[in-house]
Length: 406
Image 1 (cartoon, rainbow, N blue to C red):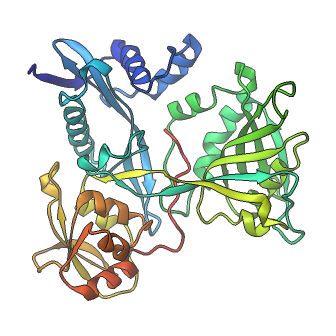
Image 2 (cartoon, rainbow, N blue to C red):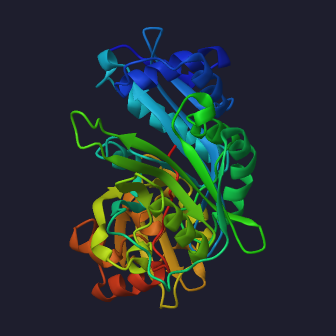
């Protein structure tokens, strides 16, 4: 078998790597010149890797400089992993394994204690230590049945903004309001450039609305676009597809939903990546106009530096537990850690619980309980009383939510 050579890509190789990635996702066409001009801004020197087999670029992976908010409010530097793909005729030869190992070593070397990704295939990444850490709802709201109650939060104003205005306004607005919940991540300049390519001014259908509070301060935004069926051969319905909605508080969130539900000629509002605890159905006079179409896996997290990641988050008021962590890819993480209300630190005490690092990642932001994962046989319980104590230690006030694709 030929040896796989993994190395950082030169700038001149970025587009070839991007085309390889799109082909691995079965995207039928290459990026247009304008889309590529924006997409290339996501590439950061040294963060894009290529896997070469017989001298040919056969696989690629990259990451964006980002951050992750963890329970307690700390914000950790993080690698947002994306662009992972292997040529269709070079799969099953260890390219992905070598890419993932090289990327994790690079992330650790940069001092980023966590890596994160959205998984196109969810069976792949646990073997590299990634665990599902947040989930989201995909929802549908009937415009004809859904009306906000009179006592739903209200206030401020909503206005439409064009693409150039959004490019200046939204990065600062997002960074200001996207706080206060585990799972929220930082967005790079390149991320924004790519995300806002599909506006009306660029020939797309994406529209943007911004909410401002009573004092005129912007505190929320929504990105949406229509999907229309043909009235000759179909029912002529219009679904307004909401790609994202972020707001600082309930008033801004409800006001943006009220705006969406007021759009003329629209049949249904369909929104992806919504928080599982969003209050929208409780704001509706007829909640049967609202439905959850699907519960999706969202952010997958990898604890690259387990001691640093565990020490960064807060824990509930409960007696300590000692957990044993197994990590086959980054063995320096393996060991036992004492976790209590005062924090986390390495320990030589006998463990109460033993688990793999991908399971620890699923617990890390508070999305799932220790008891649930123990019942799934994903955690070895040496002290039966420890599971409920660990539930209370890892619990968070609100479910984690990311709400950012990359």
